[in-house]
Length: 229
Image (cartoon, rainbow, N blue to C red; front, side, top):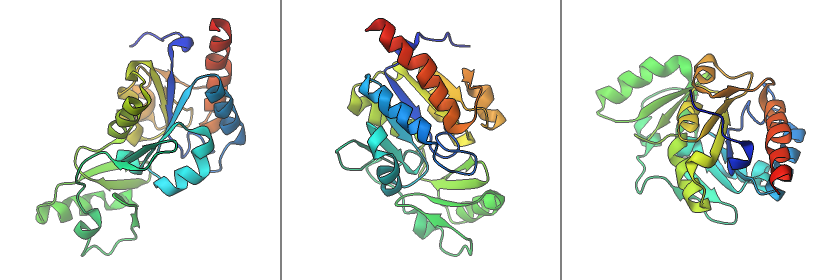
């Protein structure tokens, strides 16, 4: 178990979106966004790290983020910059999905289907010699280029922001947030997180979703800055 760093030592907070900044039914929590905006004014670097697409993140969270990591780590950008890929060449997931009659959500890089199809995807890709990572996120499974996860995108964004990962905290709710928590100095799981992530976390927040994030930032991080100022 890692030792809790003083809150004033945390320079950045990396946060998942769905069920971490929202309610369980994916409604944004305005209080959480307001608290994050306040914390940014006091010096906290905010990085939103999500499976969502970049256009969505820019529209919904641009005002509270110093950097955005989209499509589960495949794409990232700093505020005011342009999206970048985390790998020079990303395999074409869309082409590899041809022949599968599945209800599929496509991003610029990844694809996502109901998690019930995990074994069928594995058989499909293996039989055709494709190499993709299948990453579970609650009731969905994401098809990603090999070696890309949320940690890959976050570390690229932190490097651009000049933040040491050891001085970053990260918060999430799903299985795909495990690499995110492992990449930083302090890992947070919201109360509604899956058990796998709670076991990985250094700290489980007493409230779910955006309410848990708002409380942690408002009661732990913001007061620490006032004391050290």
